[in-house]
Image (cartoon, rainbow over all chains, first blue to last red; front, side, top):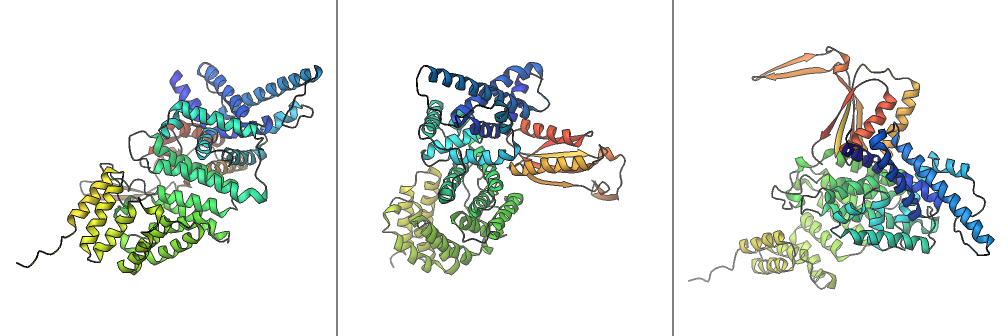
Length: 431
Length: 107
């Protein structure tokens, strides 16, 4: 095995195991920063030893054991230091249970398999703690739970590597200085904390989903990472319908990956996609996740409703078969859960598809005064489409032109200007 | 990346201990969001050949058990090395035998 092969193999083991190792270490170290440092030390040891000695038969356990020894060493050193400081009369504050250090018990505790799942869940909650900014939560989650390097995260988010490194360092420092406990949040905070985790996972997914530019695999790879995190979280908290809703939503959206870009990389709208290219395996997984959410028998949250909308599209074998009335009803529910003019615009489109353009236009017209949509190009774009269907060509053309002037996407602008040009002009005056 | 892991027939016959360990392994892979689909295949099957517009269908069984795929797992991982590592873990439980690791193109 060449050194390069060994490095790739080590990297693979690391990505499979690092989250569990860091989670276990955080419990005994009481600090994610320290835990990650120790885990990194173990990785460095592997990188040094394995290329020569060969990859051990159970590499995951090797890394875990190496990390544990380091953690215990560190605890012992800290403990000695603490005693010395006490002797000279200093007060030394130790945040974690400062009692008597019991090496053997701690040693066992780190590899306690029954605890691994809980530790992983705690790690997700702490990485997505609301005390951190959204960007910091995303970076920390990818780092601690995805096992991504700082460089990979930087590439994925088109940000410089030092910026990401600093974001992660600051995040860890904030968690330490605010004494954020490593715990599954208590019942009264649980819903809010869970929605923070779900938000981070979905943001990671969307970052990958909208990445159409460039050939860097790492950006689309974010979709896969988010799906992976979502699937793990769903197994860790199976009684939370919203996590199954989010997983369902991501599985179904990911099922369209192959169909949503044309050969030149141009985005293909949902209704024009070749449905034969949709991934039926992911769609089925999405339906299963949605079913799990629904079987919990609680009122649907926003992710469950969005997944149900995605499922309506996935169920239609052709665009014409789409259950628009059903989708419109789901958007109405979504509006009550997360009121937003964008959701309302989507509802208007569904209403227009189900009950005709005039009904849709009424709703869209009511939205034109919304300040939040003032520069949102899809509003004039949708309005233009409905006006064109109603034969109001002049108004339609003006709306398409307006939409073209608002979009930042060059390809989209071309499409909108083409539509404006194709909309028939006023009838020539009788001569 | 998706990989199809296949195993050929004729390996170590499973016992209760292997079943239990394999069950745990499968559960772990499911929990980790890795396992997309898995299944066992009838060794006998039907062979079909198309040659110059002529299609021939032959019922099994065929030659050697170890030449036929008897089970598969479709996994979703981040690299070929991860697929190999997981496959090694599988074989540590499964005992003697052989199989293949092939990337599935697409998403």
